[in-house]
Image 1 (cartoon, rainbow, N blue to C red):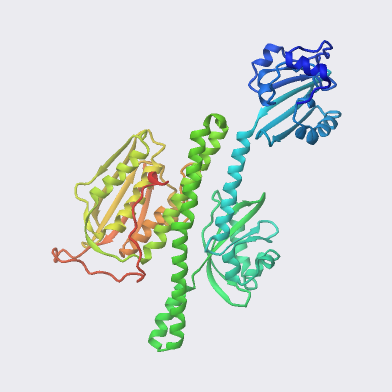
Image 2: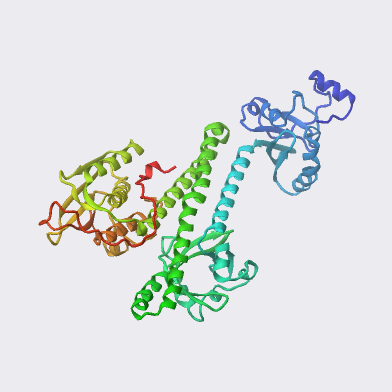
Length: 544
């Protein structure tokens, strides 16, 4: 802080206001009103001299003097801020009614918002501490950088193109490696360059027909991709509408599905005795298994760690600095935690879905009653405010793989729990009934929830397809896909029905013949020989 002369310095030290008081602006609150303000408030005359100042302003200006009347505003502000903003403020207020800026005092470590407005013949200045907002903004910026990092290091090829110009805006390392195109060259391409001539029209037509969809994420599309060396590869493209640096864009992720087609060719070549090409196809399958293992490792280790860190630091921020952050800051922290929990749940379901095909199947007599009771108990503990009646048949025994069935029941019960959340009195029932043949049993889960449009029942069990808005019922579209995969592993089937009173889900599973009650059922061949860990059932309430 600076003063104009030695006498002013003496007066300031004594707390004496100089005799020559500047005129008060024509309009302004009283001194008592200023002291009641939560923000710092100052009244200035036309020459920027201080007429009135409240106690909060003294704190925000880090000023120990109590008598600032008559001092030039820019003399009581740090020289660093004065040099940076004085001229701009003076020029702006010469023609405008309002002017504001945010100043950072590096020495004090503060962020203060200065808001000027003309008031009478002078000015009114409002000071507000925005340090918490700046800290939260940095946290959000860090979160955005983490999202871009996840995009960049994702083992799956991913790229983004502008929804209007169709020019490619970004591509991750896996995409440049997959296509054999350098990162710099990638950003010069039109998205049609990645398709064989004319093949991009089908995808563009699909995106155009789905542009009015309420869902940002679209169903996967089977198509061909053209690599830099001219090789054409069959892939499955998943698309999602995103905002990329302020531009409407489409995020594309691809999965090489040539493995499935290679398996068909492998079976034919085995009978034809073409050993050389057979070995080549085996190598391709081995590479696909390696890529799947890389994806599983990334989901298990590379993604979960940052998510736990984001959630943990957000919780610490809310606990330690909740008062400073205020309601808006706490809301932002809550959104960070909610997003990290949702992402953790998505990672969990992706791991489950990727591991299912490789799990060895062990059929045994399974009692689903304790399994269901444990799942419902976990759901209740995660939301004690819910009132939900749970009913279950007395006999819930059948043949199947215990781990796989537990995974499927967790997904089905979590689904019923979620869609009854808007009912004052929720109701869920689990039962077991005979199937179409004597060697089939059907698991039945009924609830009085929101139900679904029966016209789209065939889409319920496809990955990432949702019939309800995420704003109404949060989710990721993978739970029922996992149920479908479990039924397929048992050579069974799943379907669903809906009416005005709720929804019912069915899972039909083949059983052993009644003539051999003491024999273990035959073990079907595993879908893959790759050893993996058994899937652990983790309810949504336990995520993070």
